[in-house]
Length: 535
Image 1 (cartoon, rainbow, N blue to C red):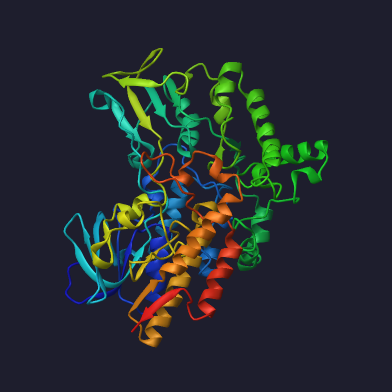
Image 2 (cartoon, rainbow, N blue to C red):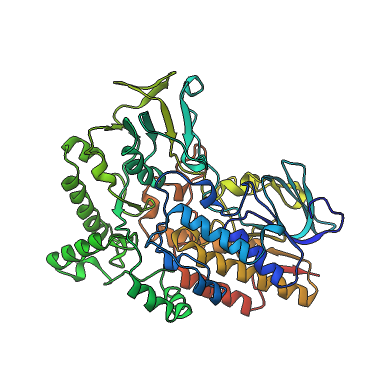
């Protein structure tokens, strides 16, 4: 397909869950579609992030496609929260089952996307020299796929191994008997630290910001629960799509203060023992809007940290006090806090003693030197906008996404961008995306885009673009909803705070999956109001 003269209907960039479903859906409509993927196989973020301990933080029975009931019925998950290898096996199964790989060029990183107004076509190029022209460009590049790799003074001098959780060697890496340093205590660091601590000679964790993390309480899936779900799997999916996060409902009351102190404490304890991310921070509907209610949840988790970690100074360093709970991505762990009781684990608080320099065999902070054989970066991503900006997308008049988003991402529904016709951004900034269960969000986006393309084909339209006024209205709505919550109070990647120079703006829609999906349906029913369609 790459390099052929005749334009195709659509190019899909990315072969994670968004890209795979987009290719399947559009091909099922009879469209000529081709995909490009930088990795050597399908899976997206689950292909790249194969670090020790990598695991999904959504319950497995809910983290799967629902477009084909036969697929739901035939795939069996083994654990409550699937490991990275199991999620990747699921992606492999989907690609095999629907013959998707034959429509994808792998090991092909897209480095240019240019819109030609006269022909109403996109030209897409890769670093390998591939070039394809297409009517539609589907950016299924993922929200967390552009690594953030800090440049520490002296890093080039380090003679040991440098590893990144976001690009872990697929053949694995033997850390046994080595002195290892981990920089970063977000989700990736929190998952990998307890696993590698059992293997290394000594582990030094360099923490800039303490994060709230909750126990996963992972286990094999209870057969009786699975049987209950499988008795009406599609009904279960319809039910969870009525909840804000498109997952099993956890909220038990409108306010934390609807319960007595004893009742509230008992509710928190029950959720702590049950585990899972959809617990303590969302037990009460006002936990992310009312500072006092949020503090009740935070206080409970802080006390748990002090009870688990033996050393009071270490416990205090691990205790978040600079942001409301869950306003940074809430993490799930298995024995994370207990790991700091091990004699071979040292925590370095970088807010007290910042890194000065990396040498050939150590990291030097303002008060000590820590010898290392291996340095692991668990420093996260240029989230939401980074993957799209990296594609060098040029729209009308050659203007770039970079220019259009100079003051922060501006999209219509997180799906389209004014000035970039026939471009669709699956789970893009301005959609619920990372705030909800991602696979249902992906399916909703792809289905909506497919319906729009079908409408265009039926009516003879070849070009679609959001109106400036409609886009501005949506950007303001995303901002309005975010400002009614506590989320903007945290320095987080949700706001772009982890990337130097990135405009600060809350990048996801916080109105919940049901409200968002209903809004999309109303727009379609109104003849795609907010869009300019041209024949």
